[in-house]
Image (tube, one colour):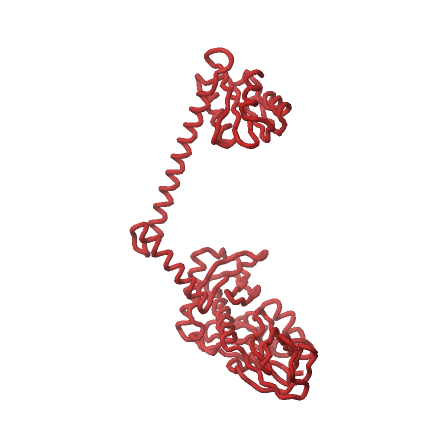
Length: 399
């Protein structure tokens, strides 16, 4: 069955071949320039005898082209193949860019290994094995180095090398799949070299010079598995649009802050510091207001350190609990505070200066109104009460 010539002659977009077999929509040829899916690179798109090619796969018996519909031609016929130029060009640029990115990784990442690679219509990924923490600064440096290598117009070439020789060359990168599948029973391995920058075992299609890649925009990073860092990037229109969006956003932010784009980091740091200070001030004011509201609750019991009981709206349970403890700890504070929070499932918090067992109070409330909770003699809280907050407060006044 026919083999693919796509990797050796990636510039070919149209060809003729003899049909070797037709099985429904599955077609094999004497030879083909369609790239079959593999190694992280998707299958080429295009037509065969005027019929759209839905998929291309390589198997033990050769390359199988799956068409969108059963063809009119048959075995023995000569057929014209047309590879989609735009998509092939995109894949060549994206695949070569992944090698350039790995070459950049060689220069900034420690204990580097190659974990995988993949191309989609929107972005490309490279999985690094590295002990280096890939921070934002590292991402920016990777992008800078990649685009510098593109600008430097480095030649890209490929050649078969003996497997043992390639394995012994520390400059050649291998991924696990290449080592286990491609090289398992092979005497030679195809090595793609970016002059003065990177070399890797690879069977994909590539441009002849890095300048053909165009601008590369690093998008993000993630951790797909233990020991792996995935770096995603875009080439072509997607990368250009992303960079324009980022630039537009940076200029808008700089305009709002009244600074130059280059001064954005310092300006943002100042704004963040001010935000944190204001947040701390606001939290302190909220606590002060809450303590005041608890102090103003109805007094129950003896004068002086009488207990405070009532409903408090607009605050969550932990904040009410902290404020209640602050209040009973004051020298002239109440003997205890029992506050009920409003909402669909009211809560109760009880803080005691010592004479009243807060845990006993909360147990009594949850026994009467459901929910759950608990605590210590000094502080306890409960939640999920099936009652109106005022009803719970009335119960507490009578407790």
